[in-house]
Image (cartoon, rainbow, N blue to C red; front, side, top):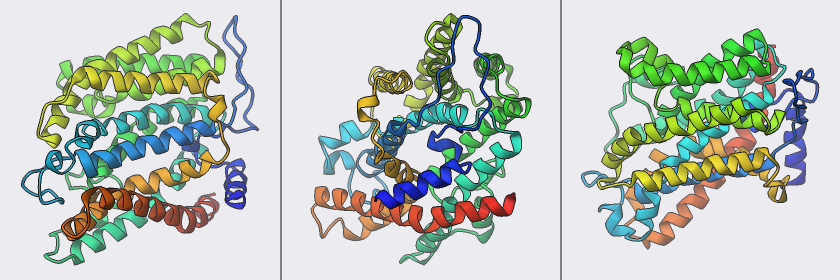
Length: 383
């Protein structure tokens, strides 16, 4: 494990993936706003732990909380199979919102001082190797399974671009929807990166995006709504602002105002998100509980930025960060397929725990034998 961690750190020091939360040591110093002193970025391993927590929340939602009575992989409602765990796992979809918060934080953190080209290359090599592998494996399993799955080759090939949603095509795996949301954040943030990240530019970006997200639904313009991502913009902005608070200190009122605006936007977005998720769990969800979970996510990220979680800033958590993305990509359809063929032979609780352990193992294998070898080669080729 020590050698693996050392290898990962070596790769990251060579201009590693942005979303690993690793600052560039050679980035030029950013002038601080008047009256503040920028804090030197630290390696926040605790963020990797939070990312894995978010992924496990989503896994719990799909295995224990998602409730489709007509084609449930368990052969019955998950509320019946897991009467206690279901009521908690039904809120696991909020792990995606935690992902978006962390994404805003770490992209701003680790891309400070990079050129637009460096930013684009780092995003590409981070996202695509594991994603391409997951598409190939998931498509093969779903097409070759007993009974098969009607999946047109065009749909599979379009998924390799990660642009299948704007093309009007289905995702090979349901979890891929969030990647299109992330891509839009990268596109918008790339505009700021092209100009060069500074405190004032990033603050202006956050304010402008929150405003655009707030008014986009009233404009009834599809292009503006697609670009502004009104449902999820507050979460990305929240992460960016929390990074600025950690970097430049807590004495900037504008940052706290932006953080408050982000949280208010998030709570408003939750109304629609909760209503949408209720269709997935076939029952009522509490907006209040959802808001409490989101608020806790904001608080955890802010605590990490301000050093309040340094007691848990363990180096070994970098391994958790390596597992997160492959676990997220692989777990849904493949996990459901395993459940369909084994749920009648194994106790449901034993099966759920064993399946999560198996998916974590598969995630490690993808990280070790796909991402780690492919990332430096792809980066070198693009360079």
